[in-house]
Amino acid sequence: MSRPILKKISLVGLLGLMIRRDLLLAVRRRADVLTTLIFFIIVASLFPLAIGSEMGTLRTIAPGVVWVAALLASMLSLGRMFSADYLDGTLEQMMLAPQSLSTIVLAKIFAHWVVSGLPLVIIAPILGLQFDMSAQALWVLIFSLLLGTPILSMVGAVGAALTLGLRGGGALVSLLVLPLCIPVLIFGAGAVEAVASGSSVSSHLALLGALLLAALTLSPWVTALALRISME
Amino acid sequence: MLDISNLTCSRGDHLLFSDLSFSLSIGELLQVQGVNGSGKTSLLRTLCGLMTPTAGEIRWRGQSTSEMGDEFHAEMIYVGHLNGLKDELSALENLRISAGLAGHKTDDKQITVALHRMGLRGREALPIKFLSEGQRRRVTLARLLLSGAPLWVLDEPLTALDVTAVELMQELIGEHLVNDGMAVYTTHQPLQVAGVTTRCLALS
Image (cartoon, rainbow over all chains, first blue to last red; front, side, top):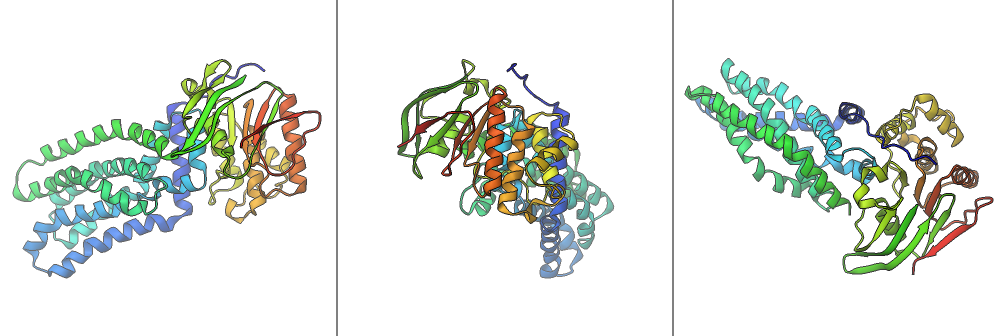
């Protein structure tokens, strides 16, 4: 038999294949997507109800509340990032495929963000209106979430990979990941608060951007390593 | 082609097997035998590279498989206990993805032909969750037809299969061996491939 050549597909081809796969799966299981979104809406809406309709207070707490709600909502879907693939054996097939596991992981993270992070970014301004946020603050909120939620997915992927196959992994992954997400929360909420206090927004957003780039370089690689350890 | 030398494998503190050595050449069929818990699955998973051996080496074409990585994975196909199919996707979609991951340029016609051969005519577009356990196994085994990999590693391939499907599997393995392939498998059911003497490896 002639020696078969290594069948690598292009980076873009592999990303496209895996993103299409995960998005198709998400479309077929819409309930999962809606859970995250509705959780976000409910948590953020509880605060005005509990605290009362004093506009000044609401405006002050708004950035923090929306960001904390987004953080908690993104934890909900982390458990599913790899566990379904692990349980039905598709994950081991991905690891045995002659393709880069880091690239596959990156595609899965991106698809996860599209399904669970992007809807939060889109719905956030409507929630912001409940808190009487100014138009400028809403724009900054959207932008900070746009930079920040992918980081949550990337840090979460590492946690999800490490807790794969463990009993009660769902709660554990939140305990593991939430502390690591504190910088994202500080700079994300900080950017929106800066609008209200009139200080510079760009420094907060620049730091968020730097965190995003750092996560983008490290997370797929670390997650792939963690997956290999978890599969043993 | 495939050379295993002094392979030792343990799970936690429990030693599964030690100092295992064998080799497999083109056209050969190896059945791994042993009672439940004797380490058959661990051996096959170690072979694939999903588990790291405690000691020993696995060589493919003279090269260590752990160093080869993807180059080795391109030449093997593994069918495990788990089917590796997504319930929400159809057989066609599942196979399209696994062919894509394997790096094959497979069109839907080839996949359909493979599914028909596995006796799944008319089930191509049905989500996997509507198929029976045996039919799911058939979809998984259709991957073998689409892959050109010389090394087949099959962990209990006959689970849930009916008599005709078992016969079909024997036929497929026979064809694969004739086409310069080789296979390692575990099974608790008798599997006879015409014209081939099955070598046995007993784990105690």
